[in-house]
Image (tube, rainbow, N blue to C red; front, side, top):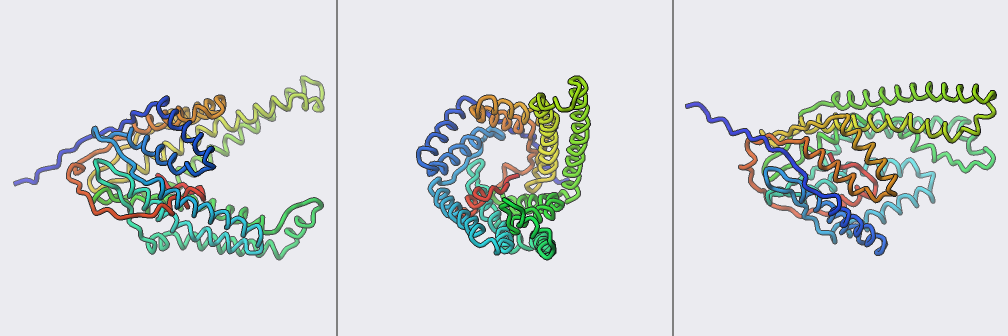
Length: 389
């Protein structure tokens, strides 16, 4: 007898949040956070996540966020205190700058694991929690080689520059408040930037492969080259924009100079030239970011699955780019008051263009719950690490 094939169900996501309703939550969060000198920020975070989770629906069931604000506050206090100590140490003992930089870089994988473990364990759907397998050994095996290479190259390059007259000349310049340790972050960024697509790939693969929904484990099937293609195309597009914008601005400057009879009169039009320059560069940049967000999101979700259940993401570059551009204009023109409206627009578009192809979702069983610390998540917030997908 032939094996019966599982029933395939196409389940679209939908988002039912309302901008006016969320504005009330958002404005109260801001007011109470300021009034309590930041203490209420933990409760504000939970209220915001619960609103977005609760208004995200799949197959007539919404998601839920279950974290305790008090646990987040405790973790946040420890994280911010540690961050302040870190930067004060850098200022007081600048000669230890490289070792402080290395310490921060090497702590990143552990912080990521703790943050995701807490966040996933407090996310649920159909009363079944998500979870994240805390495997510190595995994440260091994944990240230690590229991070070590970057740190070694940073040390060798910085030591070479230190042995030359280049840094000494910068420090000896009149009225210059430059210290040789200030060059460390620049050297580090020089070596880390070419590896960003690969690090993004390693991070995304680790996050998805360590995630569970009940007893169903997630899996990521894309390779590193898929990330490099996205970053490379975005970089080439940005360079093309800079090239075209430079030529266009040069032509405008030349025309203004000819019309005024002298290049000395360009100062009268410097305001207009600056505005045109910003528009020529920043507006197309929103479309590059929209391209990266749409294509990367599609690639990640379309290569992620829970067992035999898969995602289908159909974001498009132009609509996503327009959302980012129009949201930015609205936020600036409203002095920030339209931030809730912008967030609701983006969440609704993403949900409307995402589906879940289910074969086994109804049969997934819950696993035992485990208590996780909020410390990792708040370390992530304090260091401004992008730990989400």
